[in-house]
Amino acid sequence: MPAFSASAPGKVILFGEHAVVYGQPAIAVPVRAVSAKASITPDIQGPGGRVVIEAAQAGVAAGLSELAEGDPLAAAVRAALKELGVSRPPAFKLRVNSTIPMAGGLGSGAAVSVAILRVVSAFLGHALSEEQVSQLAFEVEKLHHGTPSGIDNTVITYERPVFFEKDRPVEFLEVSAPFTLLIADSGGSTPTRVTVAAVRTAWQAEPERHERIFVQIGELARQARRVMAAGDNEQLGPLMDTNHKLLQQLEVSSPELDALVAAARRAGALGAKLSGGGRGGNMIALVKAEEAEAVAAAVKRTGAVGTIITTVRGS
Image (tube, rainbow, N blue to C red; front, side, top):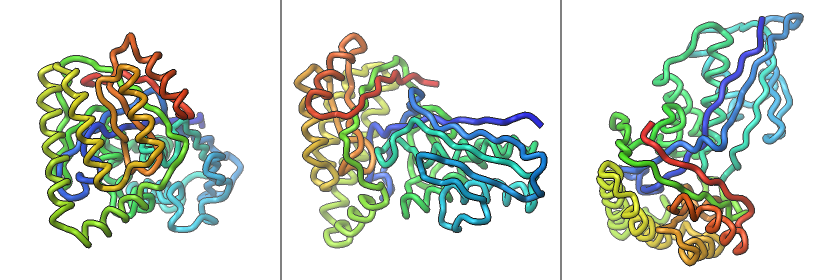
């Protein structure tokens, strides 16, 4: 039998992180410059049901049966097998590699899950639908984030910009004109589930204050949707700036992220904000394509440990 492989892109949230968990809309886009890849090699001589998983970045090299129920890689494999009604698959080795930074708001966990779900189902000859992949990846996301919004698995599975509201059908965004984003890694990271839990605790302590902030963030996402549909992309910049201020009020930024945001603006970015869970991870900036490299150099001088330049298109 031949080897099988599948991949999935990263993602960034343009607007709406944290507020999306509380019913507000969010906008996210795929980042194809980075990806997770899963490949399967059949083990012709191995006993039926023997599955070995290797993922160097996660420090995993073990048989499926040896991994705990809460291991996300194992959970993705088991989810695919269960969905397909396969209890004893042909023996195989699964290798996972990713260029997506972990715990940085780029959807690393969801991308790995999507890639695994796709390759396991392809190997077994029954490719899962996009809807199935997204839903199963969402279940695995609970291991990463505790209370995920569902946005990571959605935008990564469908690989299209999305306007997302929890418990509502996915809406793919109209992007009339492409625009350029600079993504800068602050060098620090906090697992998303930690920041999500911290915001929930703060919301429980001051619900009215936090609900007001969530509503304001949601309105920014709605405005951004209209701007993107009109192709007036430079207007996204001020909306990003405002969104960052609101995330600061939720106490999910950090001195490093704030410094990168300020440096990007000084270097000519049209707007900038943190993206994802916060307290580390990535900053994103809206830049003119011809100025992207200069802004990237500026944020690196300020402390960014890596940058990605990506173009957002409608499909």
